[in-house]
Image (cartoon, rainbow, N blue to C red):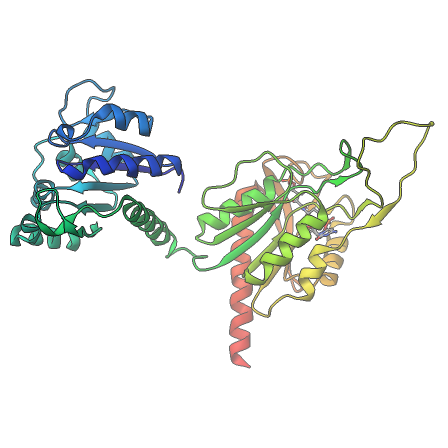
Length: 412
Ligand code: PMT
């Protein structure tokens, strides 16, 4: 959610000062908050404070030509993921309900295609007035969300419903609405409702604080699978080794360093997953002894003892649920299919992706791969493709395998 743009319209209400707290919380959480102050709002609160808190330009109503954009109402509307009006006075609700566009904020509202949320604040009689209630109903029927005002003593010394909701309540409503919209975006996708757990990158097995045993995995293949899974609508957890890749948007990342760290991450998260994919390049051995201080050189040679690391994939294969689909990788330099098939069967995988490091365009570090997809019954050779495209193919194949498993289970 952190990269989301929120367009905040502040209208003429004594509660306008509370918008500072809303802006501050959203900005600290990493949202980009674009602000439009109506002319009436600017009588209650200064644009300078809001600019300082949001670290962004604040737009004060008129098309005054002081901003870079010549058509700010379109640009602000276009980049908004959510438009919020807080406080929303009776006037803006009436204008929005009737499509009146006579200033920057109301024009922007007409141009917005994003979801809308309003937190009204006004005198109790203005709020309860049939016209205001009809406007709210109209806007609700168009999909607007509302954070109801609270009851209590109002600025006009009357008691009743009309006080702006607490800033924390408004921020919670904003985040809930954004989350709901994210869910909507993914609900019709092939993997919506599925949980995918994928590992990516090398392991590092420390010898001392300076040196370690590792391999050339960049993490690209596993990260590409995580990205493809998210694009297909899944909830994705990515166990990421020591690599410098950016986390794909919407993906939960858990970092690991050694094979034993990775084992712990996989053991904890696999029981919740529908699809488990081990794309990480795991060291089969680690140093028997690890030193707290940097080792000093002595003599012409050194000998170290290595001990076996756990076979994580094999462990996952032993506890696999009937409806869970487990995918392993095999990285080979010779006898690709023979060796890979052996791994698939011994580790109880439903699918295995075999890549040969000696084939150009396959394996470590590049953006492409060339693989054979294996199930216990089939071998499918796939030509050169991007790691993300391959990720999509792997995931859709896993979906078919799962469908087969569950329909088989229901027949028996
Ligand atoms: O990260 P990139 O630069 O994009 O490169 C991608 C890749 C080459 C690393 C990837 O495509 C790949 O082949 N990953 C698996 C690497 C590997 O460890 O292969 P393996 O044949 O040694 O192991 C077979 C399977 O068992 C793998 O799924 C591996 O994750 C798993 N394993 C291996 C050893 C171990 N101790 N525990 C395991 O779980």
